[in-house]
Length: 309
Image 1 (cartoon, rainbow, N blue to C red):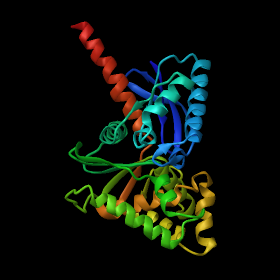
Image 2: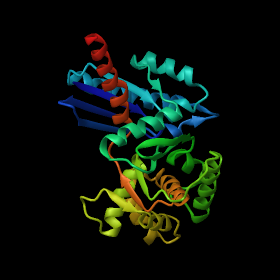
Image 3: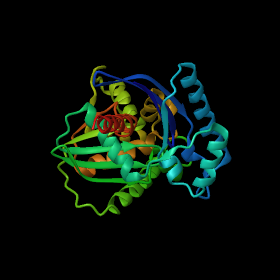
């Protein structure tokens, strides 16, 4: 089976093509478009610019799939469409211009599918899972390999930075403001916090950037997939420095995320501190793998079992 999954996110729009054979899932293609939809919000609604960016990416991916004769694919949207007040209008526009009606994943479901995807790649026992997107952050606490708590916070790397940062590079004062915003949102979950979740599993663009930047700055081997809380803290300190010699090298490593990098790292660092995480494992598997497993593979297997019965 070859199947395409398009993730209409708040910062990036991604196409993943999976091949399922002999009980194994293989990612055979991965495309990314940085659309920045979270920055195209006005008065709570997605603007025409945002709609056009979304439709351009979707039509591009449709063409790629058609050229490869991949007929089966699904499209879902996360905070990019669920957090806007003109959702129905936008969905109608997308359908008219692309022929696609994206499935809207609401917060708890997004967090659950994140967990499904990561569990395919890691032997999960006890820890914290975090997915920092452009417009939301999903959190999952798990014990004995099962979900204990999950939630979606409507604050992501891009919309947080847009809200708090006036210029390109965040100042120390702006980073302090972002810290207050994300901690207030975490407090509003009203969870009984336990600060000894030593292991974190992180997915999303911010997490991948954290690994890339840490390897460059701290002489971490190219094969390593884990970083430490000290690495993240040191990067945040560099970003908040007033000395260009400190913060410029960070942005140069991942320039395409300059408008969301500081926001994403603040979220990551504050969650690490809140739960007492020491080690952060960066997972390549995430929401798209979880969606493919849950929506496509499980459904196909269930239908096959019903047909046999």
